[in-house]
Amino acid sequence: MEEADGPALSDAAARSDRTEVPPRVAFFISPHGYGHAARSSAVMAALNMATGAEFELYTTVPRWFFDESIEGLFRYHDVACDVGFVQPSALNYNLQGTVQALHDLPDLIDGLVARVLEAGCSAVVCDIAPLGIAVAERAGLPSVLIESFSWQWLYEPLHVRAPELERFSAELDRWWSKATVHIQTEPLCWRDTAVETLVDPISRTPRLERQQIRTQLDIPLDAQVVVITMGGYSEGMPFLKRLRAMSDVTFMVTGAPETARDGNLRLFASQAAIFMPDLLRAADALVAKLGYGIIAEAWREGLPYAFVSRHGFREMPPLEAFVQSELLGFEIGPEDFADGGWIDRAPELLSLPRHPREGGGAEDVAGVIAPLLAVGPR
Image 1 (cartoon, one colour):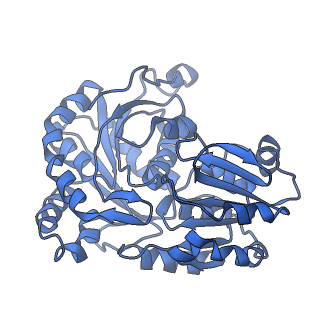
Image 2 (image 1 turned 180 degrees about the horizontal axis):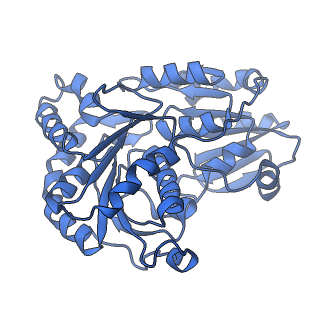
Image 3 (image 1 turned 120 degrees about the vertical axis):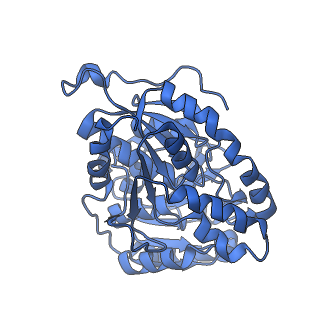
């Protein structure tokens, strides 16, 4: 559990006349895909605009992701702060590996308390990572929980297959209940009626306009463009040859073996530093697995969305319902995605219109967090 060399600190204090010493906020961010990191980045950007705050990030989400989203506003700590599910791929999980990883989580609390206090943090924000709430409680700091589902809710149907999960669920639920402020976000997987704050989907803001992004990627302004992504995972994509044959459509594909340009394909390796909101702003349609971050950013852009659901994940039905209600498109089965059967429906997807939206929930969440920054240790 080491802090990365060369902390990325901004000169935001010098640029802003709001405060001489900006408040510091610890963020514990689940590395379960990139959706939690995208949501947290949007909140941090809004909170920095509102208060000048800067951030201590505790996560194993790659540092480049935050460099692309909130460059210069954070120090990065490589900490396995959350387990979720141990996944060998985007569509499968290792249940026993998950149980084994959960065993080690409580051992991190004391060391993290010292690090958060040493960093001078005045509050702790957790994007679905309950460990951060336990750290905040022991450090005497206010905590904010941001979520659209809980791990204990996801684990519940799996107790019969892995009885130890029931004990871990109870411990996570105990940490969960200690949050000073609890915020739920759309698309919501389960509604906790005790939580007063429910906000719209939270997404990062594109940095460039549609024409600028296409020019940078050398994509004709009048081309039809489809983004294909399975989140932060690499997947076998034997259908790339078929995509090359559709020369009148440009496909931007993440999770490829390497970053390259290949005819009408723009390929990005799984660890390539890409800013997804810009890719989606440049696109006409999206093919992707269901997940919070990609749904929220597709919702903002109003993109037609052919979504890949995942069997055995409890959050899938409510996410499917949100996409079917709020976005145009259709479902693709995992097997249909893998063998490229969906490609025959690409013209159908591209025939659907985009309906971009303004706003989202990031500013609302920043408004809830900001008053806590003057509280300090309890």
